[in-house]
Amino acid sequence: MKVLTVAEMALREIVRRRSVLLILALLPLAFYLSRRDGHLGQSIRFVCLGIGWAVSTAALFAGNAARGLEPRLRLSGYRGRDLHGGRLLALWVLGAALAVPYFLLILLDDQHPGIRYASVALILAGVVAVAPPFGLLLSAVLPRELEGTLVLLTVVGLQMLVEPESLTAKLLPFWFVREIGTYAVDLTDDGYLRRGLLHAALTLAVVLVAGTAAALTRLRIRPPARLA
Amino acid sequence: MDTDRRAQWLRGVIDLCVLGALRDGESYGYEIARRLEAAGLGPVPGGTLYPVLLRLEKTGHVTADWRAGAGGPARKYYRISPQGRQTLADAGADWRRFTAGAGALMTGVATP
Amino acid sequence: MSTDEWLHALAAELRRRGVEAGAVVAEAASHLRESGEPPLTVFGAPAAYADALVDSLRTPRPRSHGPVRLDVRGVTKSYGRRRVLTGVDLTVRAGEVAAIVGANGCGKSTLLRICAGLEAPDAGTVHRSGALGWCPQAGGTAEFLTPDEHFTLVGAGRGLARPAARDAGRRAAAGVDWDPAGAPQGRHLSGGTRQKLNLVLAGLGEPDLMLLDEPYQGFDHGSYLDFWAQVWDWRDAGRAVVVVTHLLAAADRVDTVLDLGGRA
Image (cartoon, rainbow over all chains, first blue to last red; front, side, top):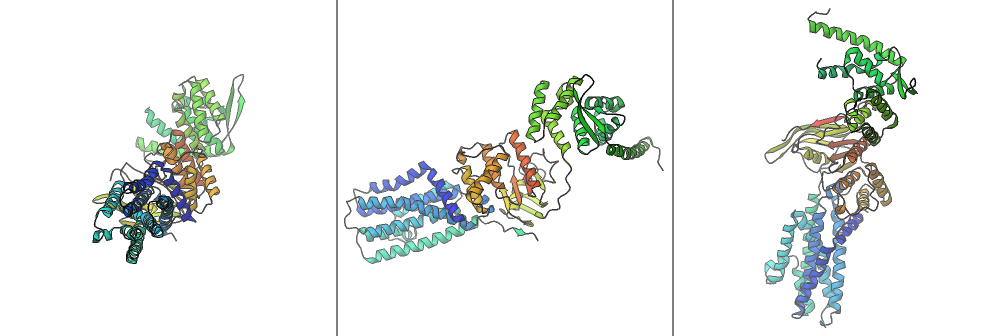
C-alpha cells in the first residue's frame, strides 16, 4: 500500500525532528498549567487548543518539508491522493499519540471531580481530526513556513480571545472546543454538545475538502500524452 | 608550414599515412612516428599516433604483438593486414584523385 | 610531472574509464624511453590522452531505431513578459542520449520540467511514453530520511518490495562509487553524496525515460566520470536519457545536442 509507505516515512521524518517535537509536546502542558489554579474549564479548553495548535503546526511543517520530494514521488508512481492521504494518516497518528497522554493527565489530575470525561475525549478526538488537514491546507496555500505559522498563531490567539458567541469565533476552526468544553465542565444542557459536534463535523469536512483540493492542485502533473 | 593547418589536414588522413608507413614492413610506435616525420608530415605526437594505432588494430587493419627488439626492451610491433592493404589501395586512390582536384583548383588548372 | 608520475596518472585515468591499462601504459613508457621527450609534450595531460584512447576504442554507434520516448514539438514558455523558450523541438528514442545545453538562465531546467509534466507550456506539445525517472537539480531528497529509506519510498511508488528497492538502490550507488549501507539521514550527507542519492533515485525501478537536471553538481572528477559511464550504461540498456548540462565535455558522445543558446 503506497499510502502506508508514505505515512510511515512521514512519521519517521516528524519523529526525528526531536527539538521541534519536544516544544510542540510541551506547549499544551504550558497552556494547561497556566490556568490550572484558576478556572477549571479554561485550563481544559486551553490544553485542547494547545494540542490543536501543536498538531496544526506539525502538519504545516510536514507539508512544507515534503515539497522538495513531492514532484519526484509524483513522477515515481505515486498519485496525489497517495501522498496527501499518507501524510494525513501520519499526522492523525501523531495527534493521537499527543492527545492520549494529555487526556490521561486531565483524568488523573484529581482536582476535577464530576466533569464529563467522555466529552473531554470527544473534544480531543475532534481536535486531532481537524488539526492535520487544517495545517496541511495552510501549507498548500502558503508556500512559506513563517506565513503559515503566523496565520496559525492568529487563529488560535483569536480563538482564545474573541467573544465565544460572536460570528468570528464560530467561523474559527476550534470553536467547538469551547462549546463542548462548556458542556463537559459546566455540565450545561445537550445543546452545547450538539452545536459543538456539528461545528466539529462541518469544520472537518471543510478543511478536508479544501485541503485535499489544494494539495491535489499543487501535486498535479500534466498527464503524459501517450505516444502511439 | 602552418602547424595548425598541417594538424588539421593530418587528422583526415593519418590512418592512411600510418598504414602507408607499415606497407614495407612491421614497425613500432616510436619508429612509425619518425617515419611519418621523415616523410614530411611534421612531428606526430604520441597522443595522436597511439589512438590511431589502437583503432586500426581494433578494426583489423593492423595486427600487433609484443616482442623484445634486437637486444632492446619489449616493444609492440605493428604489421599491416590484408584488409589494411586493401583499404590503403582503395582509399589511397581516392586520396590521389582528391588531392589532384584540390591541387588543380589551387593552381588554377582546370580538370576535365 | 615526472615520467613515472605521468604514467601512474594515465593508468589511473584508464582504469577509471574501464580500460585495461597495462599494454597501453607500457607502450607509452617505451615510446618515452626512446624519444627522451617529456610526456606532457608527447601525449598531453593523462586525462585527455585517456579520453582519446577511449574514443578510439569505441565503435561508432548506429542511430537508434527504438521507440520514441519523448517528443517535444514547438514548446514555448514565458514568465510574465520574459520569453524563456521559443518553439523548442526535441525527439529522443529508446537507446539515445540527448544533451540540453546553453548558458545559465536560458530555460534548460524549465524545458525539463515541461518534459516531466511539472509545468505546462504556453504553446506546443509534449508526448512521452514509458515510466519516467526524474532527477531534479536540487531538493530531490528528504532531510530526515536515510538513503535506504529513500530507496524504500521511491521504490514503493514503482511497485518494488522493500528488499528489492534497497538492493537496487545499493547496487546503483556502487556504480557511482558510493556505499549507502548504514549512511546517515539526508541532512548529514555531503552535497556530492546527496546528488549521488538523487541520481540513484532517478534510476530506481529502471524507468524508460530519464530526465536529469545537472545531476553531477558537487561531484569530484572521478564521480563525474562514473556519472557519464552510468549514462552510457543506461543508453546501452535501451533507456532514453535527457541530460541538462552546461558542460560540453561529453557532447561529442551524445546522440542529440539541443542548444538553447544564451540567456533568454
